Length: 117
Image (cartoon, rainbow, N blue to C red; front, side, top):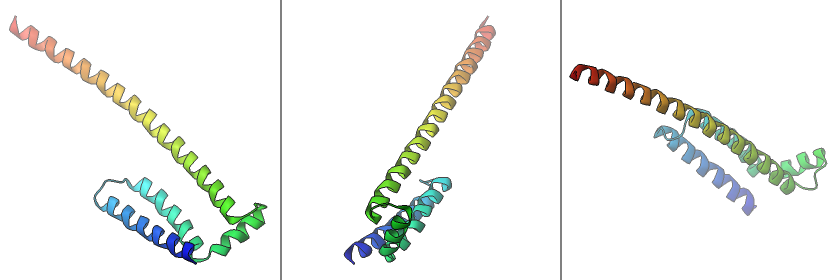
């Protein structure tokens, strides 16, 4: 019973944190939706922990705890892959912007140099 209460309280705390980050515009909506979906899964499992054992048994997994560990691992792996993709995209965008800025600076300096003559 303590685990169910702890899990439910943790889920509610995460909900408050996510909503506050959204309110302060420190978390984009697309990521907030992801974490809210996680909470939609966590809260029912917290209230009905035996439900997880039933799902694990149906899938042929030894216990609900094993299922949670596996799903948590897969989820974190997917989040890591997604964030790596985002970082790669942003690095490419930053490089392109830096190149464009260098060309603009060169163009401006050339025009200023022509004016001085």
